[in-house]
Image (cartoon, rainbow, N blue to C red; front, side, top):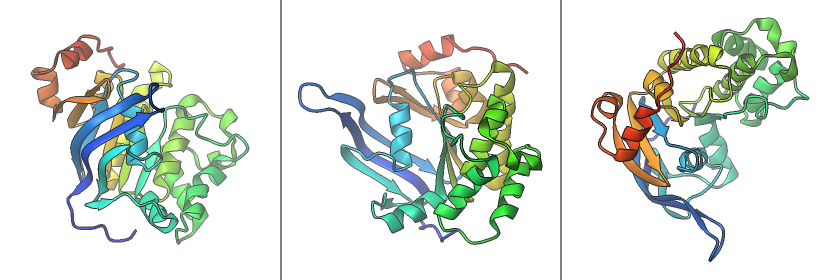
Length: 259
C-alpha cells in the first residue's frame, strides 16, 4: 500500500452538503456537515431512513461528490482522476447492506473476491490472498468454488467482507452490513467485523439505524437527523447523557441483540 499522507485525520468534512434534483424539486440529503475521522477510530453514523447516512457513506468512498463544501482524505481533496481513484480505492473499501445484491451471481466466491485485487492492480499471488481472506472471515476454503445462491445470507455477507478486505485497505466503510441478515446471525457478523478491524488496525465507519448495533462495535457516535449532524460524542456519553431529543428518541427504541 502506498505511504499515507501525515495528516492524522483520515476524513475531514468542511461544510459538506449534498443536494439532489433541480430547482423546485431539490432534496437536501446532507446539510453543512462538519466532522473529522481519525486513523484507527471506530465511528458509528446513526439515523433513521432519510437521515442522510447512506449518502454520507457514498461520499466517503467517492461514489458521489458533494454539492458544496470540501471532503478531504488525509488532508487532500478526494481524487477524481482514474489513477488517483485507484490509489484511493486500494485504501478505502465498503461493505453494503444487501450481500446478495453486492455480489455478481455469475461469479464464484473465489473470482468475486479476486476481482478487486485484479482491478486495483495489486501485486502478489491472487489465489493465495483469496484463500487467506476466506480463512480470515471464517469460511471454508472450498467456498471459493461456490456461487452466491449456494450460500446463506450470513455467508454471503462474509464473502462481501472478504471482497472488501482483499485489497488490504486501511479504511472500511460498513453501510448497514447486518440489517438484511437474520437476527440469529447478526451478532456473529458484528463480532467478525469487530475482530477484523482490531486485528488489521482498520479505521471503521459503521452506518446503521440501530443504536444497539452501534453500541456493540463503535467507540464514537455521530447522529444524523434529516441531513443535519445533531450530535457527536463518545459512545459512552451518547448512551448515558444524550443531548439531542432525536438521540434520546433513538435510544428509547433499542432492540436487544441476541447473546
